[in-house]
Amino acid sequence: MSDGVRLGVFYTIVRPEEKWILAAAESRGLGVVRIDDADVTFGLDRPDVEADVVLNRSVSHTRALYATRCFAHYGIPTVNSPDVVELAGDKVLASLRLAERGVPTPKTVVALSPEAAMKALERVGYPAVLKPAVGSWGRLMAKVSSPEEAEQILEHKSALPSPVHSVFYVQEFVAKPDRDLRVFVVGTEAVAGMYRRSSDWRTNAARGGTTEPLPLTPELRELSLKAAEAMGGGVLAVDLMESPTGLVVHEVNPTPEFKALTAVSGADIAGAIVDYTVGVARR
Amino acid sequence: MTQCPECDAKVERNDKVLGEVFPCPDCGTELEVFGTAPFAVQPAPKEAEDWGE
Image 1 (cartoon, one colour):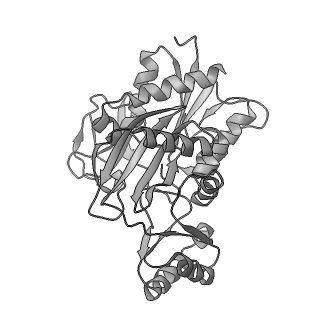
Image 2: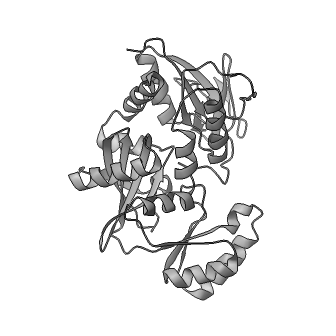
Image 3: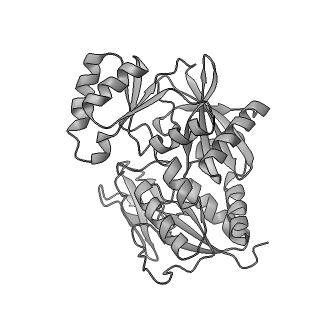
């Protein structure tokens, strides 16, 4: 089944997900090339990496962005592709694309200065959610309930050194049950789903929320595949909320974790990712 | 077997692989395997602003 495919795994740290991917590759007889994102170098002329395809598992959006471009330069396909990493890894670009493709998504307004962010909050209405454009795990997200609170939070964000904090991504606070939904898409298949529940308004599993199996209804499958396709397709985790007007997609993650999802669904997600990646190498 | 660089507790390799991140069984510090023969660990990289899914 492997046909001598050499699978590059580009990573920052090895978590259970990466261990399962390495084990799945080994069990399929693939040659595995481990590529540490803090150690690799990229020349302009020829690949320093001998792989037929590279699976990106770097948790750093910046490293993933440049590395996938470099691999593409060498003619080595990546999962996900550089365009997908760029688009889905940036909430602003991802929201624009979801809207362009008619995928229901929460009301979102972007601002590029603290003053404009106040206007954006007025447009969205209180309470609203302020998110960093890049990064996840619920880090630096804020629920903003009033203009007074907004001024304090914006002043704090403006004092942060990175220019990325001067991009203000303001989203409506969706009145939803205390859970959100995650559907894991590999290629053209929705392979597993779960509810994530938390007493905190952020339901990220990384923040300690609990999980439950999510039956994949035709509506969920269709919407998740549409969202994944809007990003360019590949291995993507689609996060959805149950808004009063129906399901909305609020994020599509290009380097998704799946430890909790594997436990709750029993699906062999690592195997599905490896098989899909080998398929990309053969295209 | 090696020792946690933070608290000197004994840390066993078991089935850990190169690059694997795990908490020290004693003090909970996140550690990273940076050598397997011999087994060696160091504090895991700190989470950066652009880390995520």
